[in-house]
Image (cartoon, rainbow, N blue to C red):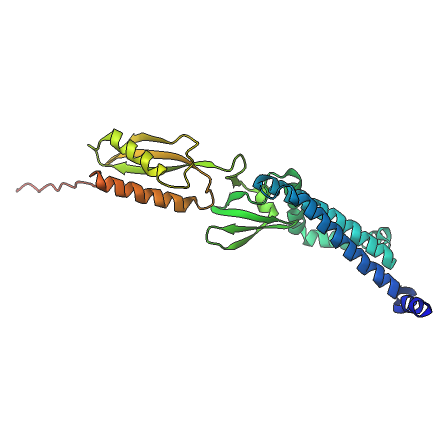
Length: 279
């Protein structure tokens, strides 16, 4: 027992009379381990209820991030207090330094504040599909400073949180898990309008990713310069891969048009040359 006591009382660091002993290091490690254990238990308890609900998982992930940051701040404060460093003294002594650092890291602080806003507001959640600067991204994680997303090319994109909070961002999956999309197509003048509308509707219904619980619509949109312009409107849950869905439907439309002798015209222009009169 005496040897254990000597081991715990052993001086590891002695700087200006400030001593860090073995038991101090032991308590610091213990705080880290307990913090990790508490966070693991909280995560298991929070996500167990929402494993099958994607929308609830996004809300739970945001709430868990906030809890994680709060617990780690408390843990770091306890570790500093265990070592013997008083936070009030530390902050008072480094006030001028913090001002300089704050000016230098202004954008970083902006991203951090934006991260806190995102996590607390939960307007953007894990699993949401966003359109940012013309790029469509599925959000994978929301961090304190940056968020990580995956675009349609399977490339991970690191997004500063301030970019999401200060710019115009389209959230394709905010209101519901399915969205209405459109495909425009033109056919030659003289085509059977009713037949074209029928083909457009049948083409959409052939695709497995088209929602049959929501209304389909095909309409004569306008009389173009060289074509009758139609628009197909449909709902789909495959928001992230919707361009592939649109491509498949266009192929079906093109096949059915060919089978029914309906042509898709291209812009044409007649140019007439006037012959100069003989003088």
